Image (cartoon, rainbow, N blue to C red; front, side, top):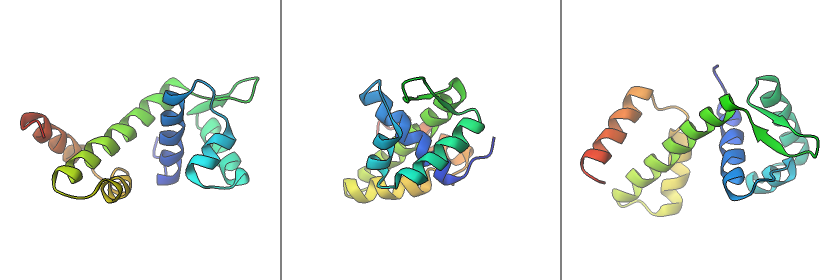
Amino acid sequence: MAMQESGEMYLETIFVLSQQSSSVRSIDVAERMGFSKPSVSRAVGLLKKNGMLFMDESGYLKLTEAGTEKAKRIYERHTVLSRLLMNLGVDEQTASEDACRIEHYISDTSFEAIKAHMQKYSV
C-alpha cells in the first residue's frame, strides 16, 4: 500500500510510543507530534480504514500486524540514517530531522546499500 509521508509519520510515532508504554491514546500522539486532536483523529481514522491500526474498547491505539511491519521499516530507516549522518559529523538534532525527511523518499535499494555499508564497516 502506498502511503503518504504524514501517514508514515503517524505510524512511526505510534510505534515509538508503544515501545515506551502499552497504552497509547490519540492525545499522546497529538502531544508527541505537536498536532491538534482533530488532525490526529482524522489520521487515525485513515490508518484504521487502511488496516494499519485499530482502537480497542478503552480507546487505546494498537498497530495491526501490517501497521507494525510498516512502522518498524520506517523506524529502522530513521535510526540508520540518523546514525549515518551523526557519523559524518552532523549534530544529533539535525541528523534526526534530516533522517526524518529522507526516510520517506529513499529507495529500498539505496537504503539497503547504506545499511550494508554501515554493517560492513561497523559505522
